[in-house]
Every structure is written in structure tokens, then in C-alpha cells.
Amino acid sequence: MEAVGSQLYGMKLSVSPVNNSKDYLKRLCPQNQPFVAKQTAMLHCSLGSSRKSETCSSLFMTDENGFGTRKYSCKVREKRKLVANAVSSAELCGFEDIAAEVHSIPEQEKIGVLLLNLGGPETLQDVQPFLFNLFADPDIIRLPRLFRFLQRPLAQLISVLRAPKSKEGYASIGGGSPLRKITDEQADALKKAVEAKTIPVNVYVGMRYWHPFTEDAVHQIKKDKITRLVVLPLYPQYSISTSGSSIRVLQRLLREDEYLRRVAVSIIQSWYQREGYIKSMANLIEKELKSFSMPDEVMIFFSAHGVPVSYVEDAGDPYKQQMEECVDLIVKELKSRGVKSDHTLAYQSRVGPVEWLKPYTDKVLVELGQKGVKSLLAVPISFVSEHIETLEEIDMEYKHLALESGIKNWGRVPALGCDPSFISDLADAVVEALPHAVAMTSSKPEDMDLVRSAFSLFFGSILAFILLLSPKLVSAYKMYLS
Ligand SMILES: C=CC1=C(C)c2cc3[nH]c(cc4nc(cc5[nH]c(cc1n2)c(C)c5CCC(=O)O)C(CCC(=O)O)=C4C)c(C)c3C=C
Ligand SMILES: [Fe+2]
Image (cartoon, helix red, strand yellow):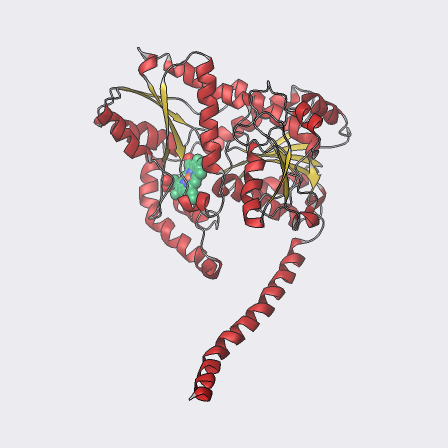
């Protein structure tokens, strides 16, 4: 879990605590912590404070065991990917330090937790406007800068075209998304779990595409005079299209407001590698496996929501890497409990004509059936509530496809929802993040944007002038030669 004070891709990170001494890192991530991020486990990225970070190009990374710190220098583009990875893979393990820091938070502080989620249409009439909000998000349909003016007309067109199919889906699960109800229940459960640790807290829900919108939550946070805020996206793995999009909206709202700019904020970018989450997932899978007559023969089928390939390959979205790592951690936990079943990961819910992450869930299901797999347990892995893609796509479409393809025994692991061990782990994540909250920068980003725009305008005009003149220059040169 990583507590980050400011934005991810804008490089204004204050990942804490920043310290590259070997002993310190050893203490933070002792070898026996099972949830220390695998792979390169980039533990701390030392990007310093906002202004400096624009030019800084060092990351401090550690190896798998938390040892061997090295300074890593790289170009900005590469750094973005590394930062995203660092932010996602870093794990804070210094519990005593954190407990001490929490106790040092002044009593007059008013603590808030903001749960960020996607939101869903509550009635069939909501479907088209909900889809409009979704497709109008530049993190969902990523148009080149030059074509951004087309975003809203395009969103209008796509939402109208897609609405009938979506409506059918929502109609089949009772006429609307259950997301608001479930997220409210999770917020209540989380409030109780944090307060059980003697920390009074208000928990807010901010949805990206439907009510209650992030704007509403932020308005309430200000009204309640919250002074310290932990932001927790309800997506275990980070994607530009989910947590990234919600966090960007939130940061704009916080920066725009004089009061909110001074609230200390700690953003938990991703938490897929938390021990509590991994164990909670393993519990659910283990329980469901027991309902099969021959659990060892069951194929555990992790089905994640997909994203277009370009997100990962061009924009450096850490989503795929985090997803694979997450599945590895769950499987490792299951193996440690003696589970012998095979597993596979595939991506579902693709939309539109572009290439999405592969392998595709529907294709893999058919292949497994053809290969003679007889028992399959579907595990939704990218989201912690039941929603249209579990209740309709997995439970109806994919189940039908699997049975048609020769699979005889079908099972599905429920989403975590308000599972007590899961909620308790989220409460721990909140408490660990609290001491790392920092206020948004007081420098107005609009000013920076203005300078940047003026800069681009100036050099753009020169370039345009040169391009305009160049054919004349060429012909003048030709005339001179002839
Ligand atoms: C980690 C989860 C999700 C990722 C990644 C994600 C990316 C993504 N989604 C779309 C398009 C649609 N998503 C829709 C619904 C929807 N998406 C998620 C989660 C992720 N999306 C959830 C939980 C839901 C369901 C909400 C609910 O009402 O229950 C929809 C609407 C439903 C439909 O018509 O299928 C669309 C459209 C894109 C394009 C994208 C990545 C770019
Ligand atoms: Fe989606």
C-alpha cells in the first residue's frame, strides 16, 4: 500500500517516508513480510517536493527482499512508468512507526475518508446519461489533444448507440446498478472499523459517473470542516481509466478551493498487494472450491475487467502488471493452504473497435471447454462489489458460454462487498495512510497552465511561420538555382 500526497502522472509525489538508508529499508520491509511487493518491488521513490520533482529523475528502488537500495536515473517518459510501478508496488511495513505517527495527529483534526468509485445508473432512464458521463471522460476515450473538442459530441453519439444494449443488461439485473447501495454499506462498515480503532472518522462516497458525484462528496467534506483526508479508490489495482480518472477529478476539485487546498490529503493509489485483501480473496475462493465434488480438478478462472492495450503499452498504465501480480499473490496464498487447482487469468468487458488486453475471457472459456476442463470457478478480480459485469456478464453470458463449450460444473466467487476481514484490512490501510497526508500545493495550477499555454503559443507560431514560409523558400531557392 502506498500513501501518496499528490498526483501520480503529474510527478508531484510525496511518497513517504523517503529514506534510502539500508537499515531503514530493512526495518520497513523485513524479509518475512509476505506481502512485500514481488518483482522489482520499487519501495520508495524519492521525487521530493512539487517544484523539484519536475526535473528530478531519481528513484530509489529495492530488490525483492527490501534490500539493495539503488538510485535509478531515467528519462521523464520512462520515469512516469517507473513512478506508476513504484507507487503501485511499494509497501509500507513499519507498523510501530505508523502507530506512533497516528497518535501524534492533533486531536482537533477532523478526519475524513473518501471512497472513490465508478457509480452506476439506478434506473433504466439513467443509463444513457450515465454512459454519456463515462464516454465524456478523456481517461475513457483518449482522443489526441487536437481532437479533444470532439469528446462531448462523440460521447453523446456513443452513449445513444450503446444505451439499448446496456439497458438490456441493467434490466436483467433488476433495472439498475447495485453499486450505490453496496458502496454505502462499505462506507458504513469502514466507518465502524476505523472507529473501533478509536479514531473518529466521517466516510464519504464520491462516484465518477453517477450520483453521489465526487463533487457532492467534496462539497460535504468542506461543509464538515474535515482537516485530514484519506482517499481510497475502491479498485484494488490502479488504472488510468479508473482510480486515475477519479483521482484527477478530485485533485482538480481540491486545488480549485481555498479551504480544500489546505486540507491534508493522503491518496492510496492501489492496494492489491495488501496481505488482508489477498487473504480475504483466498478465503472466498477456498470456500467456493469446497462446493465442488473434486476441488483439485477445478480451474480457478480469474476474470478481470479489460482496458485497451494502448493504455498499458503507450500510456504506461500499471494495471496489467498489477493484475498479474495480484493473481500471483492470491495463488501463492492458496497454494500455501494446500490448494492444488490450476488457474488462469483473462480479461472481460471490452467495448469498441480497439484491441483490449488479452486473452479475452469469452475466447478462453471456449478453449478450456474444448480442452476438456469440466469444472470452473470464476473469480471477478478487478472490483470489490457486485455490479453489472459480475451479475450479468459473468453469471449469465459467460456461464452460458462455458456450459455450451463443455464445462459441466460452474461456480462463481462473490465480490468482497462488506466481508469483515476485507473491511478490517481497508481500515488498517486508512490508519496507515493517515500520518502521510499532505496539503495540496498552494501554487495555482492554472497559473502554470497559463505559462505553459503562452509558451506553446509562442513556439507554435514560430513553427507555423516557418512551415508557411518553407514552400516559398524552397521555390525561391529553386529559382535562384535555375
Ligand atoms: C477495474 C475496473 C474497470 C475498468 C478497468 C474499466 C475500464 C473501462 N470501462 C469501460 C466502459 C464501460 N464500463 C462500464 C461499466 C463498468 N465498468 C466497471 C469497472 C471498470 N471499467 C464497472 C464496475 C462497471 C459497472 C457499473 C455498474 O453499473 O454496475 C460500462 C457500462 C456498462 C455497459 O454498457 O457495459 C461501460 C460502457 C471502458 C471503455 C474502460 C476502459 C477504457
Ligand atoms: Fe468499465
